Amino acid sequence: MVRFVLNGKDMQIDAPPDRRVVDLLREDLGLTGTKEGCGAGECGACTVLVDGETRLSCLMLAVQLEGRQVTTIEGLQRETGAGLHPVQEAFVEYGAVQCGFCTPGMALSAVRIIRRNPDPTRAEIREGLSGNLCRCTGYVKIVEAVEAAAWKMSNKPPEKPAKDAAP
Amino acid sequence: MKNVFLPHSLADLWRHWENEPAAAVYAGGTDLFVKMRSGAINPPSLICLERIEELKGAEEKGDFIRIGSCATHAHLLENSLVRKHLPVLVQAIKVLGSPAVRNMGTIGGNLCAASPAGDTLPPLYALDAEVELRRQDDSRRLAVKDFLVGPGQTLIGQGEILAAVWARKADGYNLHHYEKVGQRKALAISVVSLASLVRLSSAGVVENVRLAWGSVGPTIVMCPEAEKALIGKRLTLETLRKAAVYARQAVSPISDLRADAGYRRTLAGNLLLRLLACS
Image 1: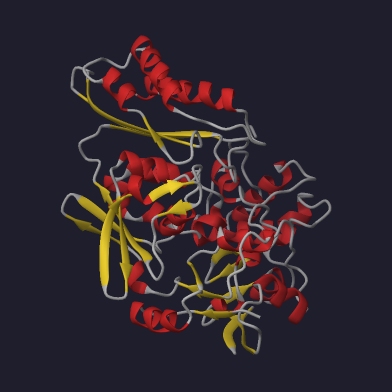
Image 2: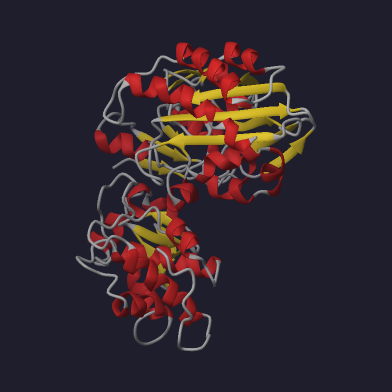
């Protein structure tokens, strides 16, 4: 029996201890927002937040969730009550999504970047997203979206000033 | 289904391991699960060390910083002792894997994986680091360069864990540099890497130097001839070029999908020339 908090909800799950967390989430709990890309820690599609830190759910076993707080992309929405999280809103607004496969992992990495540093530079955003591969967008719009989300979450004026505009 | 045990103390670990001696031990899992997925290994059961507090953190011990084997890379990046005394290690960890890999992977795991491309290995060689190996009723210390015997091979024994890394403080050096060449900036296995520690006199003369290359041999490569060629000299392009000749002779790279041997050999020498830009 594994006990942990998933997206704010207490869970007690009778999962095999060697079940990968990505399989537990997707197959056993039906939370298919978390994606499996490479299965080897090289793409970041399976990123989840464990006690607020990004972790790769393809390289973690169910038993390692014992006592932890887990946030998946489904929980990000709930975290702010109704509607989308500001990071998700910014991804929509800036067109930071194409096929969408990397998006849940990207969004969770973005949340961690902004939590650690409410006013990240573009270089810091790129560094924070460096473990999440996107094969569609070329990253520019994703970086812009994270920058805009940070701005929005800091409760600053609605117009984001142009800063370090060069990509 | 494999049994997976999550001990919360060393006492817990020994008790359990006695009953399941064939269990594989892991901390971050970033290496083990990749090998299990590919079918390279298939242990009957697993033991995860991530909850053992005795194996975490870093402390000052005389001339050394003792780092718990299960300290994650992310933890070490923020640890004030490591940042102050072991800057070359910090530089290497900054380019290891990705943020999520650094949140999971540990310094002990990087050593036990024993990849010649492991990013913490060249700094630990340059720092004259030692590993502390422990089993239920004894412990021993070995130099990292003796602990690592080949790709994926270490001298860790049955029933033994890597408990800590002892890295000598690099306070006597004033130039600390780690550079790796990879195929991209993040999430890249090094094609060649070089950790350098240099003590320069106020007149700019090399008084002491330690150089350790990654990904150019079965383990990390050091080159006393190249170090000797630099001692007593200023770090000019000419001096570094001479030392680079020795470095290219010392390495024994292979060709693989990332680079061929000749390119690695050239690069091993060229990375040394970068010290010109750092001094």
